[in-house]
Image (cartoon, rainbow over all chains, first blue to last red; front, top):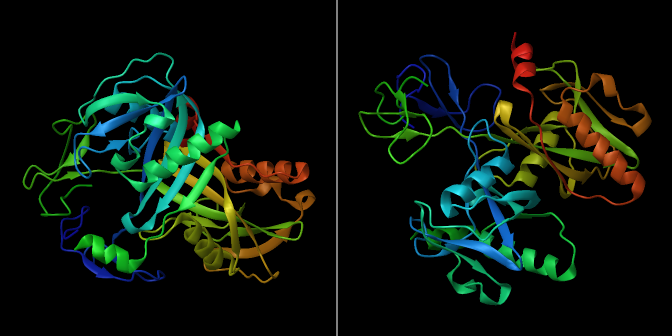
Length: 186
Length: 186
């Protein structure tokens, strides 16, 4: 951020009065521009004993498999966003069951919310952001080709809970060691 | 938003290529300015059989009681944010137990996350955004003076679960009828 989105003047980085963190502040019109984490919402959509995965057409992690998910939009419930993303990325119309996994990822300022859902029919296809969409049994999940650790964690929780016959909402903070983060960014 | 925060030129409202919603777009530097829901994070902090509430010093709903909560910051886990807000608003140092309630409020583009927490000692005081902080037994909660419906819902879930001896994570979409919303905004 370089310019004030309200008046167009240059912004500065400073701690506003009464605050305790640096923000982008416009000294011309006195607007404080807050920047906050974004919510990613998606589905674990099941058909019989299989779950729906999509192969990413876009970066990051193009070519790897993911659960359909994307940014929650303004004016949308998180469950509606999860269903919308599944329709957009996997062209699959799902019925939402319940919120299942919530991950906090401070190093990228994101929160992930995955909903359990059912696919009434095995109808799906690659959307614009996918090259391929398929149903996988637990034994067939491409564990080594999953796009992100949160996808692996969500699927592991899901299959564990399914095998014991009881789903329980899961919440995890994913905190990455700063040394590891620097290494990844090299 | 009137000006591009990247280059300072005027933005327009339009559907970018490959998108399906109107965004603020800068036609000068081709930046799309996405606007997304924000996350509010807070605590139900218990000391023995009492929960900690703060009376709001600021609008909206100044003078009404709330659970300590506020905007999740970039670079912060949702649980750390909940503890920070409780320290800022109620000057209480809590130990987080687990995520307890998640509410999606599309009419204000917010997601609320409340964590269960314990207060190791009954030490608290009004922070800058509160006029008063106190512990309440279930029978003493000022139900008619709570700031927001999500606060009432969270407390009701909490006391129900406590009385049956088992806490279960709760997720709800709070969808308000458009006619009701228009009435509220008059």
